[in-house]
Amino acid sequence: MKPIKHIFFDLDHTLWDFESNSDIAFETVFKKYQVKADLQIFLNNYRGINERYWKLYREEKITKEELRLGRLKDTFIKIKEDFDLQLLENLSVDYIEVLPHHNKLFEGTHEILEHLYVNYKLHIITNGFNEVQYKKIKNSGLTKYFDKIITSEDAGVKKPNPIIFKYALELTKAFSNESIMIGDNWEADIMGAKEAGFDVIFCNFNVQPVSENIKSVTNLMEIKRYL
Image (cartoon, rainbow, N blue to C red; front, side, top):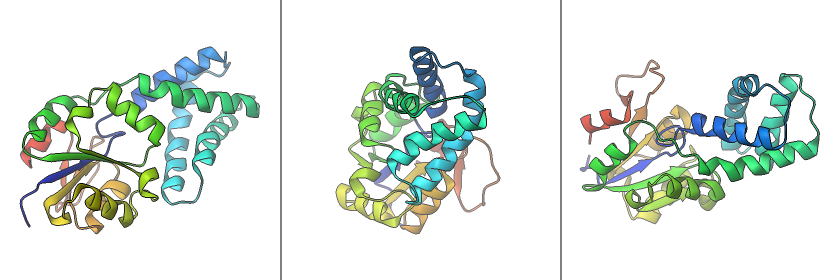
């Protein structure tokens, strides 16, 4: 394998602390619309439902709009709270607006990026929505580190589809055998990139069992072991 020249990062759940920022965004919009549901009960149920909807979205089984509204509707139904479609629409729109204004990063994000961007070209590959992801990157002070931002909306497909990785290589003028993908999602980031010929590092923040032939880290600073 050639020496690594290009490092591709996932954004949400890898560098950007999605759960913490999402919780604050929901607290804000619940107050605005005086939602009576217990916030913590909502969040506890929403997280798993949101993950399921994102999996369907990655697999092209639902649209962006179905993701945005469906995850809220299913959560309210599960916790047996009354709602109307206008409330779902209001919460959905305002949540997306508020979300990138809260930008907690995982510990070590700036330190590891400072370490890497001197010697490598750094890029983002994300399945997130364009109107949110660029704001997250800017508002959290990450813009200077990244050469290219590759979104699934621009690529027309989502990770783990090999087309998005091919699109990323073309956009960055990189070759797969000199590229590495770093992310938290086993299916989308790790298996997807590996199938496309990238080396990979799994952000195994939940300390799951991992095959010995996959590089993994339990915190961002451990990436220094490999790069």
